[in-house]
Length: 561
Image (cartoon, rainbow, N blue to C red; front, side, top):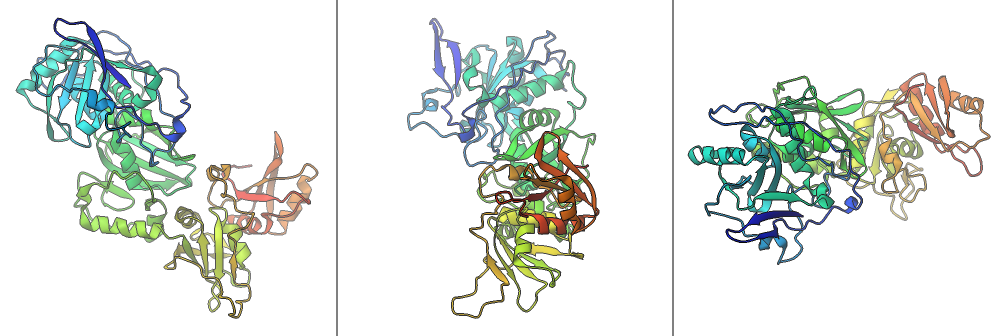
C-alpha cells in the first residue's frame, strides 16, 4: 500500500491511503528479496529545451526489489503498482477514499500530479517525462484512473517541470497530458509491500542509469536480446509483446532459434524502457515453472525488419508485406496459448493480420498430430508413444490401416503438440525424415465395440503409468530438449555397471562415450554415434527393466561428454 503525507494549510500532518489494496498472485506468498541495487546519481543529460536546471548531487535512488519468479502470463493480476487491473477489496475500496486533486491550483511540492494519461501508459513513460528536470525518487501510477504521481528529490526540479509544461503542453504516447503540483508533499512506500512497486522502481533505476553517473556497458541501448530457457509452452511475438509493452513502447521484434534455443531481439523506444524491462524481467518465468527469460543488451542499435509475420514485426510500420514466414518454422513458436492475459494485439496490424493470428490460434488449440514418412515395418503405437512422450503425455496413437507410414498421435494438451512439432518435425527416425504437422482431426477415435479389431494399430495410453508430465510442476517440464546424440539416463540401480548399459545400448547403434554422474550414480550420460541412433535407442531403451523395481528412464540431453 502507498501512503502520502501532506499538510493542510494551517493544519497538522495527516495520512491517507491513495492506492487500493492489491490481491497478490498465488505464488507471491513468500517474497525473496535481492540485494539492494544502488545506482549513484550524477549530472543528467540536458533536454532539448534550454533554461532547465539539473541536479548534480550524488544521491542514491530508491532500492529496486524484484518480484518473485512466478508466471508472468497467469490470469491472476500482476502485482506491480497498477501495471494490470487489481482486484478491489470491495465497493468501498481504498481508492474511493482518495480525493485526487483535479483542478485545484496547489502550491509548490516535490510531488507532481499528471492527469489524462493514455490507457497504455507505463511507469517508464511517466519517468521519462520527468527525466529532463532532475533526479526522481518515486513514481505511482494509478492505471484505472489514468493518473500518476511523480516525486523528485528536489522541489526546484518539480517547479521547473510544472512551469515548463504550463507553457508547453506535455505528451505521453502522442496524447496530451496535464501536469500540476500535487497537494501531497511526499510519497512513502510501505517496504512490506515493496514487491508491488517492482515496475516503478525498475523504471526509476533505469532512468538514473541513463541520466548519468557510472553505467554498465549497454545501459543506454534500446535493443534487448532475450533467450527463453525451459521452453515448455509456445512463445511468440504476441506473447513477448504483451510482456514487454508493460515497460514502454515496443518498436520492432525478431524471433529465431539458435543453438537449439528460442531467442528474440526486441527494440524498445528508449533506453529507460529497455533498462526497466531488463531489470524487472531478467530471470522471470513467462509461465509458472518454465519459459524462463534471460535478458541482455544487444549490440544492434536498430533492427532491420522487412516483413510483418510470425518471425518479425515492425510495430511502427503496419504496411510491410507478410513475406513467406515458412510453414515449417511459423507454428512452433508463433502460436498463441489459451488462457493468457488479454492485452490484445496492436490494432495497427489490421484485420487481415488478425485473421491470420486467429487461424494460428485455432490450430494451436488442436492436440492431434499427423505423423508421416514413418518406416511401416518398424513403427508401432508403443514406439510413437515413447518418442512423442518426451514432449508431452500421449493419450492415443492410431497407425492408419491403409497407409501404415502415417499415424495420428493425440497429446494431452495443445501446447504439447506444438512442442512435438517444434522438436520432431524432419527428424530422422529409423533412417527416414519424418514429418510432424497439425491434424485436421481433433480426436483419435478408438475402434467401436463389435467392429473388427484393427490388428493393434490403435492404442489408448490415457491411463498409462509411464507419462512423464502427469504431475504439475514436474522437473521433466524443465528438461525438454530436441533430439541429440547424448542421452540422459536415470533410475539406475546401484548394482548396474557401465558395461551392462553400454552393451544394451550398443544393440541400437554405436556407443561413443559413457559417464556416470559423479555425485549420483542413479544417473548417467551416454553418447551415440548419430542423432538417428540416439532416437532409435531412446525408443527401445526407455522403460527398459533393470530390476524388479527399477525401469530405466531415457531422455534427450543438452550436455556433452
